[in-house]
Length: 262
Image 1 (spheres, rainbow, N blue to C red):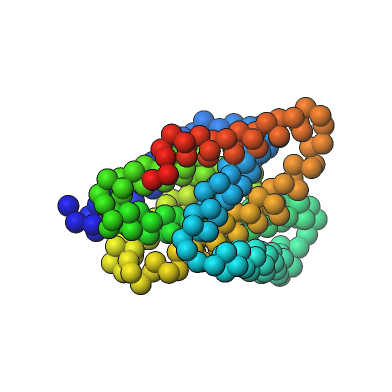
Image 2: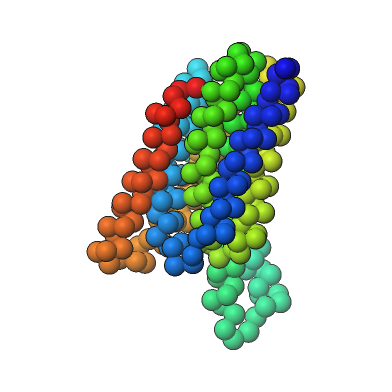
């Protein structure tokens, strides 16, 4: 089988399994689970960044200063992007949705829109790079490609599930959250095809793309999600938050151990 067909099959399988997991949550998750399970999403996002994405970016031979500087620039970029999204929704609200009782609904809509944008952008970049990595592994060896694809599936399932919970927490409907997850899943197939067709040309950009993906996940976790946890300040809530954050991190680590380095 050619590298192109192997990559296409692996990326479709990886994206489909991750999306199926998010779909399962759509059918089973209850609304009152979401605030606590967002803590799991925070752990999964930060675990993916610091245990997988960033170490991989730093291992690709580019200067650490470049990788970390790109990540810093990415965090600032996502801040600016969030402000632009927020400004657009503020402007639309002032133009056509002014009135009593509209502030709360508008604020929830704004938060959901900008959180959704951050998740889709970050997850799409990450999935696109995953596709490139799968194609690079298959170009080296078919067995290495298969192991790499399995590792990405194992790591992607908790991440996609966490992303879906983040979108629910941001006020999006389950149907719209699923549509966003499906959109970002297609990015893995696109990245795999792009990588297979232009592998040598894109290899030097992988550390930069990984750094941007890490920046988006850090920004979502730290700027959008963690502040919301502080609104539930009871001892019981705090204990559950810490436990679920650690569970999210542990899920990423266990998946890494089970599959191996790839």
